[in-house]
Length: 169
Image: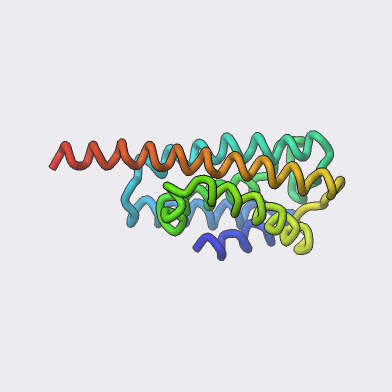
């Protein structure tokens, strides 16, 4: 679902629309919180990812490193970017849970994958790289730090939630 969500969000941005990304993400949130465990952890991760992600993406816009399509208030990242961060947060305890205790590996993977993902988004027309040489470095470093932080939070909150569940049983 994350891969589908990535395309929905990025293609929404490319079409200068936010609504398809928002609709998909709301549907994903409803489905996710209906069927998956770690609800409290995932709620917190969504909020943390929005905070971290939107600050990062808005900073890159403010620093004229990249320009987003469908951006309603400059330099605030557009809604489709918010949706990408929400969709990504929902993978941390699930499809990416194997990285929860491998934060260095998560940082390395993120440092490599983030510029590739943003480049793909630019090729699809959702954003423009204004200063590519600087942007690649900034993306790699920021994601290389942000994702291990989110993994640390996921692991901590998951252990807390797990402890609560065992105490009740």
